[in-house]
Amino acid sequence: MLPETPGRPRGALEREILACLALADRPLSPAEVRAELGDQLAYTTVMTTLSRLHAKGAISRQPAGRGYAYALTGGPAEAQASMTAHRMLKLLEAGSDRERVLSRFIADLSHDDERLLGDLLADSARPDTDSP
Amino acid sequence: MMLLGLIPLVASVLLARTSGSLSRRLSPRAAAPLLTLVALATSAATGVVLCLAAFGAVAQLPFVAAVGGWSQSTWRPWDQLSARWGVAAAAVAAGLLTGACAYLVRVSRELVQAHRACRGLAVGDDKLVITRDEHPTAYAVSAGMGAIVVSTGMLRLLSAGERRALLAHEASHLRHHHAGYVLLAQLAAAANPLLRPLARSVRLSVELWADQDAAAEVGDRRIVAQALARASLAVSRRGRRPAVTLAIAETDVSVRVRALTSRPPRLYPWAAAVVLVLALACGTTAVTLTWAMHQRIEIAQLAYAQAQVGAR
Image (cartoon, rainbow over all chains, first blue to last red):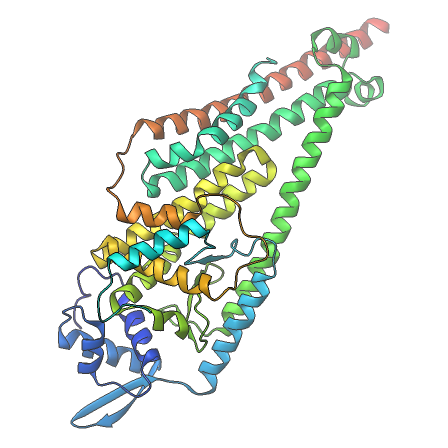
């Protein structure tokens, strides 16, 4: 087994790969996943992590060319999890202080905040990731 | 003795006034545990002092003295608190204790709900749950095994580097048990409302801590700031704001973005010493006053026993 990639704690690369597969509308080959992650990862690292995820049943694979293409499992189990997550969020948001149990990534913004954040994104606008 | 009892109150006011600057002078990973500790110590000491004051006054009442078997006359000349103050202290103590209990009940219920929901999430050891939902959401659930829930709508907004930053931020919350600090600080604030600003500082500290972890992992603070900005703006522009928008000039997001884009602030290790001294002072006060009260009861009981023997 390969050592963990430097700078990534345990499980981080697995999460990134899952996120990447969730966005794709078709199964992806290891090379495509590697290009999508865009972090100079070794091909073998991506390959190993994909196999590990597949072995755990987190993702499915199908033959494509000489290797495999990977996708999220989908199906009833995933739909169930998705629904549960949605219900949980609704339930906890109903509380007077919904942030007690959930730590959300973002908070509510004031108008000044919106300007500050807009400026930040305008400064760092790159043609490939610029949002409209 | 009376003045000693004011220490927790003075500490509460001091902490409320300085919680913002204290947290800025400490690194977030030191600020979160230190501020949580001092909040708990101050809150507990406040409760102890109020209970002792209430007891000291109530103990002068004849029937209480009879039940306790201590001499009412020995007790009285020592006590500077009138019964009226004692009743006031008892009322405040009861009110604060009720607040703390109500908070505990609410949090326990929410934790149980979240724990049950987490079981249904089928969380693997990567702890990530991706929901097929175009509304951008991302959060860490700290109940049970812990889970990171992210919607496809959120993932779609971000570049690969920003996605990595977002996932690293949430993973840091789970890895370092950030929700625990926030819950304990909020419990302290429920038992002593003067400490509310301190609880808010703890909440901000854990966010800054997770942002720092994410920046260290991605190797670029700016990418974390961009992820935060893009996600916040997208949610904000969709108009799904809660009915009550906080009417404060600086919300946590702008503080976090500034922390990520400006030069790291100079840290002052003595701020940690100040916090520790306050925590220690509160703890010592509670112990000293309790011990003194115990001594007084012993002496009053001795006087009572002697009077009984003398009467025979």
